[in-house]
Structure formats: structure tokens, C-alpha cells
Length: 540
Image 1 (tube, rainbow, N blue to C red):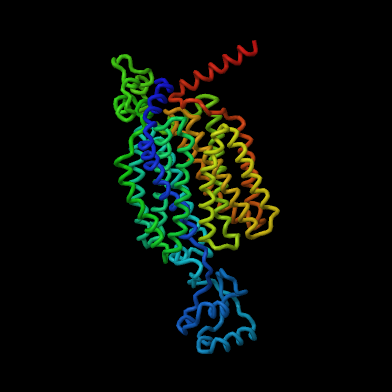
Image 2: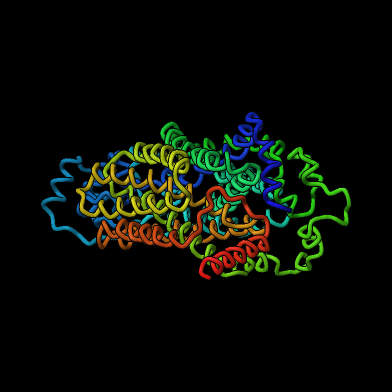
């Protein structure tokens, strides 16, 4: 099917602005829920102060601070050991007497904590205090976030190829059902293993929901509206982060917070009912009549004679790989079927990875800034909103390629500048600027990904990028924790350098401004042949 004819049919449909706004609402609003869940670890996991529980002193009704002053070596805010005092003796003393005794006596050996007392003034009850995810079990705390990242990897692969094969809407509905089951269930479990299992399912559902909704929006619209809608779509994610910060402030423990951010998912039932299938997918699947019903342009799409159906439809109906057990790999390897397609796949896989690593290093690195966490998370979410709207201005006057290069360069420089700044608010202000610019760059890169790949492989490419991108949040905590201990500036220096490398790689990507979206690899090959012919004619 000629892409220009499809664009013309969709352009007529998009002139109904009420319909366009309705489609934007149906595809973008789920991202508010996704944004809250994917960043909820900041408050669910928390980072409360803790020290060893001394049962004898608790029975004596000592305050937390009194117990800490007697038992904790060096009065550390997070202590995994305690002094081996005779607490049976100390509990019968007045606190001042006990403190004087401990100061005048030789310090005994230290012992590992058997249980802990948590300071829940700055953080309400979290999964850390629920399951004692501290000291030797500290990696289990990180696993609460790592399980979501693993789920997103699985979900990106599964739902990306599922939607290319069975339709965007079916993939969307399956993602919604999984989300509706896993998210509220996580609030009621009393087993850490079950909690991690539901977190993995949340990651899978979030990945499938996000990529499918984004793809439907792009495939239902035309280039005149696509740029603006793509960037407004991402604003919903930032709104979800701000909602998370507010929900965390208003709730008393992690279970209440999990339920609070799960409640808005009820609206997904409306989305499953009213969201239309992508007409572009229906055309490539040979379902021209259904595509015509959505677009409302039968003359353009439905042939009068079945024998005159487009070669694409006949080809897809006769393809044998539908019965192939390894269809997942078959679809993925098609992304490397031509040199140009392979180049785009590799570069955009890197750009998505870099963008996610940059994002989560900034998220996790916030613990090094002495600032209220509710305020910090809210500021980060707020900074993303103008970041996602900035491309609306840039892409009106400049191309996707040049805009992405400039934004990645500024984002990289912002992170490198942090290295020479004093700790505290100067770093926070510059990091928020970096967050804003990085959000703008990432929004354009996401949008450009869908434009650069043909319809029959578009969601597979999008899913591939989402899959590789999840290695960013997997690596980020290790970069922040391990390298950050050696030098606090090392994580930001690494992400800044990777952003500059991304700006360089973008130079090898073609500009897609004012070009129709392609539907098949054959069309891409035809364009490549035409381009080579023009180059040969120009040199002769």
C-alpha cells in the first residue's frame, strides 16, 4: 500500500480535532499510572536511618535516640552492629547514669544486629523496615527496583513482537489486565518473594502498555500533528511522577502508597473499550475493511477486486514464518536485514540505553543531595514537563536530527559541569537543567524511532529499543553505589560522556522531517536504491 495514500486518508480523519484529542487522551493518560509506578521505588524502598534493636532497652521504655547513643558505635545513622554491653544491667539505670557509665568504661566488642529499629520520621514505613532489607540483605532492596527493570525487558520483547503479530490493541488489553492484577496485589502481600514477583509483572505490564499506546498514537496520526502529539504524550509520565510525590507525602506507609498509585488504573477499563486498533497494522495484516472503518476512507484502502489486493497483503498472508516456532527471533533479526536498517537499530538501541541510564543515575544520585526527597522528586517531575514540551518549539523550525544532536550535547555538558560545582543546591539546579534537556532529547529520539522503521517492524524495533534501554536502570544503582563511593562525581561524568557520544552517533542518522512513514522493508530498500541512483547521476 502506498504510504502517501495512507497519510492522505489519515490526514482527513485527523482534521476532526475532537477525535484527535480523544485519541491523545486514550493513549497518553495511562502514562501517568506508569510514571508513578516506575519511580515509586524512591519512596517504597526509602532509605531510613536504622540501628540495632536492643530488646532490654525497649522494654525499659527508652527512646530511639537514647538506645542509639548507648548501643551504636560512632553514633552512625545506619549501623549494622552494636556494642556488647550488659544491657540487662543498663536497663535498670537512669539514661544519664547509663550514658556516663558507657563513656567512662572501656568499649566492649561489637556484634551484628539480630533485628533493627528504624527512624521513620523522614520516611514512613517502607519495604526496608517491613523485611529488614539492610546490611547483609541490602542487595534485596535493590532487587525491588531490579525486578521492575527485568520485567520491562521481558515485556518489551514479548509485547513488542506480540503487537506486531496480533495487533496493537490486543497487546494493549493484555498489558492492562496484567497491570490491574499485579499492582494492587503488591500492596497486600506479606512475602518478599511474592512482592518481587508482582514488581516484575508491573514492569512487564508498564513496558507493554507504554510502547503499544505510543505506537497506536503515532500510527493513527499524520506528520502535521505527530510531532506535537508525541511530546504531549510524554508529559503524562511527568505528571505521574508529581502525583507519586504527592501521594507519598499524604500516605502513612508503603502499602497505602502502592494502593494510592494503583487506584487510577480503574480508568484503563475505558481505554480497553474505546481505543481503536492501528489502521496501519490492519493494512499490513491484510484487514483492509477494518482499517477502512477506522479511517473512514474505503475508496483509498479497500480494493474492488480481491485479485488486485496489494502485494504486501498477499505476501503477509502467504508467509510461512507465521507457523515458525521461532517467530520471535525471526521478527527481531529482520531489523538487521539491510545495512541501513541494522545501522538504525544499533544506534537507536544505544540512544535508548544512554537516555535511561542518564535518567536513573540522576534519580538514584539524589540521595547524595541534602534536600527533602518529596521536594526533589516533585522538582524532577516538574522539570520534565517543559522538557517534553520544548521539542514542540524546536521541531517547528528544525529537524529531528539537528535538534537531538544539540539537546544531547547540552545534556552531556550539564553533567560534566556538575563535577566542578559545590555540593548542595548548585548541583541540584544544574541537574534539573540536565533533566529538562535530557527529557526533550529523549522525547525526540522516541518519536524519531517510530519514523525511521517501517510499519511491519516498527513495534519490534520499538520493543528492541525498550529492551536494551532497561539495562540502564539495571546498571544505574551499581554505578551510583560502587563508583560513587570512590568518587562522587564519577557517575555524572560517565553519563555526561555517554550523552556526548550519543550526539556524535546521531550524525549518521537520516533526517525524517517532511517524509512519510514507510510500511515495509521493501519500500525502504526501494528508497535506498533511488538514493544511490541519484548519487550516481550526480557524480557522472
